[in-house]
Image 1 (cartoon, helix red, strand yellow):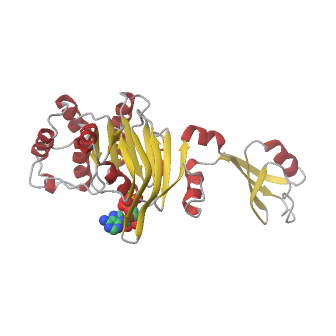
Image 2 (cartoon, rainbow, N blue to C red; image 1 turned 30 degrees about the vertical axis):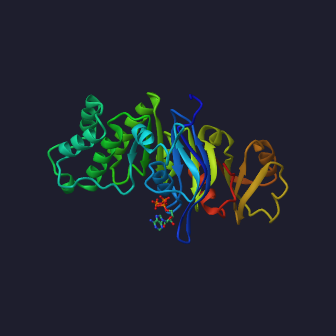
Image 3 (cartoon, rainbow, N blue to C red; image 1 turned 180 degrees about the vertical axis):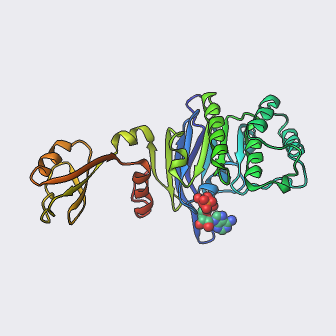
Length: 304
Ligand code: ATP
């Protein structure tokens, strides 16, 4: 059982009329990891998470949580998951306290100590009516609901929506602790920066397909360095066309931008043929790297 992934999608397809929201997704999410599920709006993230909760049924393929089939073993799956939907809808007429009591009872009990700790840490007023809360506080109630039973798998659909930066930091700390205790966090977002510090791996979804699954540490190691150079005089066109291991990103007038993984020496030799005024080198950020996945045609990246 220990090799069973926390989440598995196999050939998952879901269409809404003509819209193919999921176009054959295959993905394994290992247990005990913080996993980023990334993609622009409309990529299909919410649809995939809803299939896991059996809120919608796929047209083909299957989804599993901890080896349980999302459609056949729905109760087992729900028992093991904490779910924060993207379109959270709570019992608006109840107070925060009564709302949490109700959900806790429906779940058949939660970790009371932990529930209290979450309410304190997220600075929630228990006496307020849920319907009168700001969007951020409403979202916090949703987070407490997802977390308070200490489930093995957390399915969080854009969880930091509407949260201010300080609260976001607290939520990140809470999720980090959950992972340290061996739970799995499946976190959907449309911005890499949000999960970059937390996630070991991320999957990129685009137009219903997984275009890449990346180990972020590995990705950082493989990312090229970018070198920006200003010359005294504009080099003639073609000056840097044949430098092995170096990609010329742009050459306009006096300014040039290069990228290289391991050919810095060759680049410096080529640059020495010209009078260099300034030279700067920096690591490409993961955001820059990932934007290329958004920009490429769907399916052009690495398949999972
Ligand atoms: P967002 O970040 O905007 O929530 P998402 O990645 O979660 O995006 P989904 O909500 O899963 O994407 O939507 C995937 C595609 O399916 C979109 O084109 C969306 O318009 C479409 N879609 C989703 N739900 C429905 C529905 N109930 N009826 C018709 N089309 C739908």
